[in-house]
Image (cartoon, rainbow, N blue to C red; front, side, top):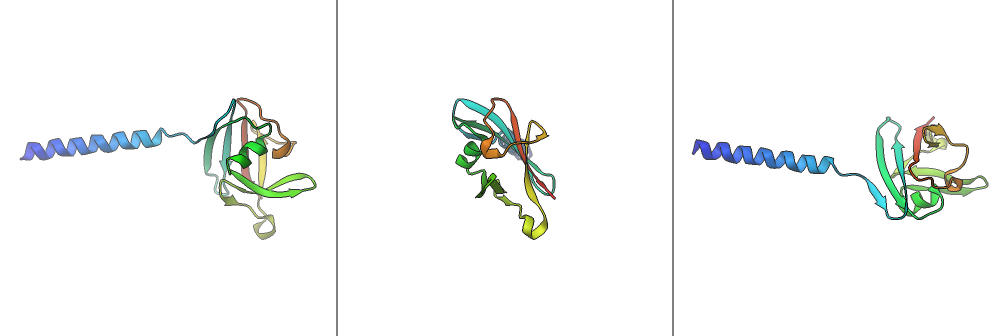
Length: 128
């Protein structure tokens, strides 16, 4: 009886380890298409969420809007992003906003006017 309990315990532990390993291996792949880029979201606490985006859209903004990863309002300067991956930044409330980065550099173009470049990394970070 003791041996049966040991065997069952070992089997359950092995099963749990396998389930955890499979769960950790999941990647956040969104969309489908010929072009592919990395998308990183950094919230106000510094927590990163990484995505792999596959798209046929021409701009990063179109691709992220299509996948419902960003929301915003149109302005005279283009899309003003207010929500990324469900997280809102509201300058009027707490002085925070979503900053857009291309390959680690602060973007000089808006997300809706930035053409998709295969292999690039695009990021939105909450800043104050």
